[in-house]
Image (spheres, rainbow, N blue to C red):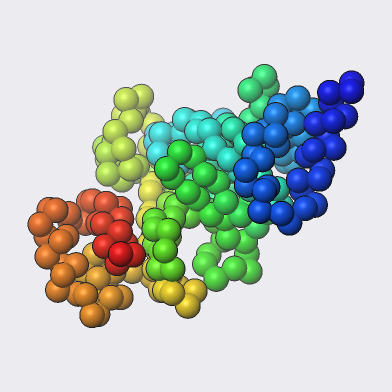
Length: 241
């Protein structure tokens, strides 16, 4: 009990202190969360949506497997949380390791998720972008925000592959409902303004003084529309130098 009280005191002092040392004390916060169960606040919300009907594809980002990341929820960082993004409802699902049920968090209350070298940001209903979660490319003043949205569709044709966003090894020809994928990209300029971009050329045109250099770099790398993410990262890396 004494150990738990000490850890709780450390955690509270870190939350209320504006000191730069907070970034260096993430291990102490992590230890408190694991010991005292402070992460439980994430698991007190609405139960995540279930999908009991038959369908092909997945409503989730990519193949629907859980990732592990650090979630900033209502201003506090919670470390090593299993999560997946529901691209149909634009909610994230978080799940305690010991329980089968997941809880959903809204983008308005979840400002960021960092999973390895990937970063996602949440935008609420009154934000500059449509409500939802976005993967962020770039670390400088100019960035690209990518949103994947899923829609419930129906077709008698074989849609395994590009229409659902990946090859589903459990695809069933006799099931006609599927989750189709729509992807949108937005460029954020140095002043914080957003503009939707639909091609690599549109992204390059945001840097008129370096347009020729960037076009040569993209062509040399062999990037096309199907490798749009990699092209965004290349352009942003070059322009941040």
